[in-house]
Length: 128
Image 1 (cartoon, one colour):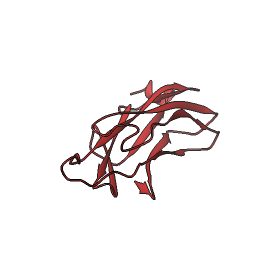
Image 2 (image 1 turned 135 degrees about the vertical axis):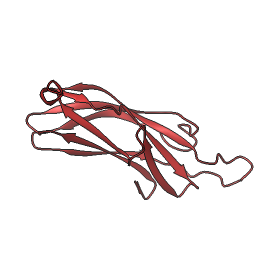
Image 3 (image 1 turned 180 degrees about the vertical axis):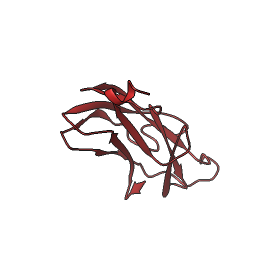
Image 4 (image 1 turned 180 degrees about the horizontal axis):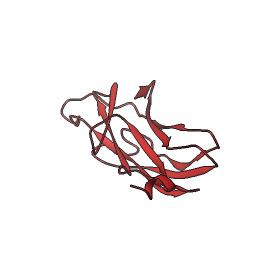
């Protein structure tokens, strides 16, 4: 989703929220580039015991609206790596964030749903 001038990507912890877990995140250029359409961010999300939702905010930059240079739907990616504390990444390790006309924003991942990541508890994963 978009709040003011930020792209927001939600990371959800599924199948239990026992103990502390963490995951690293970073933006990756696509047709939208860091320093032009958005500011690159990276860091670590830390979920405390019982915490199931975190939001990564990516600052969006004002873009010139000259149609001659505008990319139709510039997009960048948010990439998750290095899950720690007994969680594993779901099938989506990257989330594509599409900027629409510099004002509205939609996120679409590999499976086409909204701008959300899922973290799965490893014990759950072993029994699939």
